[in-house]
Amino acid sequence: MRRYKIVLIAIIGVFFIFLLFRLGFDKESDDSLFGFERIFVKNKELVFDKKIDLELGVNNLIYPVNDSMLILLDEENRFFFYNLNRQQVDKEKKIIAQQGFITYADADKFLYIDRYTLNSVSLNNLESNVIETDSISVFSACYCNDNIYIFLGYSEKDSIANVGFYKLDGDVIQLVHNVENSGCDKDSKFIYDLSYNGNFLITGNYLIYVCSVKSYMYIFDLNGNYLCTIRTKDNVPSPNISVFNDTYIYTRGKTFNSNIGAFIKNDIVYVLSYRFNDEHNVIIDRYSLSDGNYVNSIKVPELSCANNHIEQLFQMGNFIVFYAQEQLYVFNLL
Image (cartoon, rainbow, N blue to C red; front, side, top):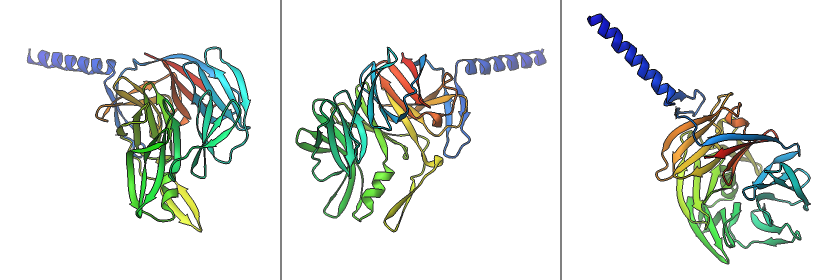
């Protein structure tokens, strides 16, 4: 009788363990350097819709415009206005080659940075204007609501070097979040620029700056007001930046890449981390917007590749779009 009870208890225990796995509460440890143990739950947010072959020679520069239109920028400085619903280019615009790099684009204009100076170019007449940033060196920038710009920049005052996010509202510049301070030297600006490399993403009612080589994401509202900082659990080390004969040597490799992109739904921040080596599923980590803590992770089996094969992630209304190898993978966000 006692033996029977032991066997019965064992069977019940095995059943409950199986049930937990069926419900999706399984754990999986990433054995790569700087990985962490993830708690996986069933994906109830992303439903695969379609895959689109672009075949336009896109050079990793894609900017969502609205719920159905995105801008593709090729290596010949042509803007393609691509209609996601019709899966075709509605129009294209040839622009003059810029000396700097483009940091933002929409249906009317694009922003580019040349020698740490922010410029705006109209897509209607290609007129270029310098945006005055009060002697602040600009690393990256984005356009918000009602003639408001937000940018990550560097300034020096009273022998103190400051890196922070600034809001430009009309002619008024305001520091909305300070990131780091140090003493001034001739190399600090360039080192900070490399260390905080990243990009702005607009997602719903939020704006996220995703650092690509640091484990940080800075979140703002669409008026450029700072809300919070999330430090992801990959916790990669800062890149090693050295100076030799006025040349900045940036050593990072794959080990030091951090996050690729993010989007927000309700109180959850969904993060596509570079630091996961599963070759058969893309993994998305979920963090709480209110306290920044890691919640759990979901798998996206429709993307049968590793996280680091994804080049961009962005939101278009109720669509979440992954870009990889000149293909768009479109998901409905429930």
